[in-house]
Length: 167
Image (cartoon, rainbow, N blue to C red; front, side, top):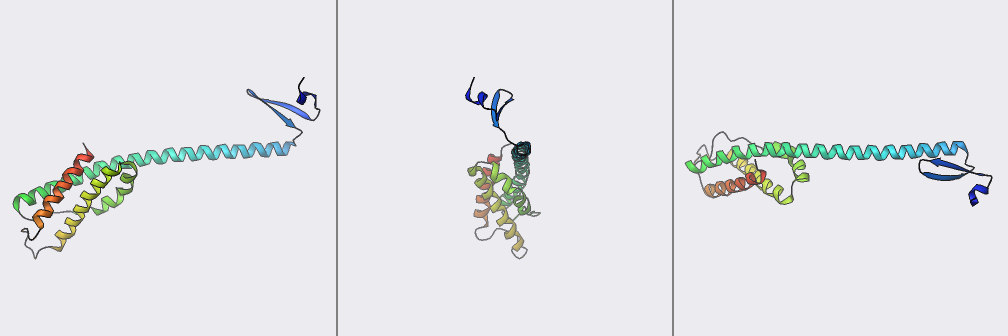
């Protein structure tokens, strides 16, 4: 017979494989402890579920960003290629900053930093082209100054970003 078995104020409580010795704890305290334990377990489960759901959402957004960025970079590459071939600024240029702003955080959180930096550089070039083309050249679309060099560099950056984005 153990020490606890000989004490009259101690009860042995069995819960699964564990045996716990409880020394005359009032029932309302036991109920409160069980409630606190339930709240703690519920909080941990809720937190874990939210973390898993957030990660899933981030993965989905990062995949969507990749698909959208691929399409936009392909469009920009085509426009730049035509512009370089003709020695003129392309017509029908469309701005993309809103898409980049919408999906940048998702891409940054899920992609390797080097890949994100290459795509960010391509979008910076696209942003610069958008502003440069809107500023215009008095209606003349022929390359002026360092336009050709900028277009060639931008196209190379877009090509690199497209390789990073894959198929």
